[in-house]
Image (cartoon, rainbow, N blue to C red; front, side):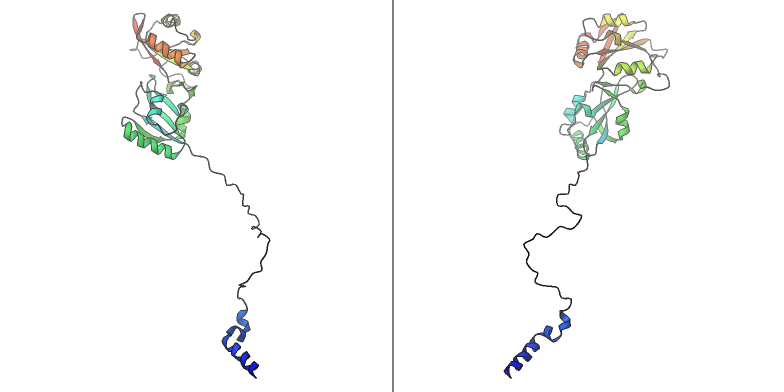
Length: 254
């Protein structure tokens, strides 16, 4: 009798035993222990390599430079932007005067840092974002010089000069060039050779240029030097010298 009372009391205090259907659908609270590692989901690998996207190059155009501004001056100004000489290109106009520089930055952060540095140290300069096509449009040669915009290879004749574009481009493509300005109209290549006597240069590379403007009676000459050091030596020793009683100014094209 007492056993029947015990079972009745147990059923009264355990509603799950009173209605077995309630146990259906309940999650298992106890899982069997296993010494085997659980297999990863199919199609996934713990060692999957996720490639890091390459850094995006950013291009800027620097204006406010003068004919005395060197690329190394810009590198010193923008110290901390990880620029090299290969990241700086000089743009010349038809008179061989630098009108700006194109800069290539390795990241957007470097470009923003350059703007801050110019704001703090170089307020004479202005840096603005530029398209890569402008960078590709400029052509460098051994990091020393580039073809001026009016001397690029085109189908039409060279505007303002009587020298062929192909010859001028071939000359500028070689190492370092200097520009002689103020030559007399009748100057010959032999006169340029005598003027540069004592300097090491390629005499076969002398290219005389005439401005076709009637009021301009001066000539210019491009001369190739084996290195920038020898070109600078010619600038130091020959600049402001005289050829046919004309004072000659020399510039090393960057």
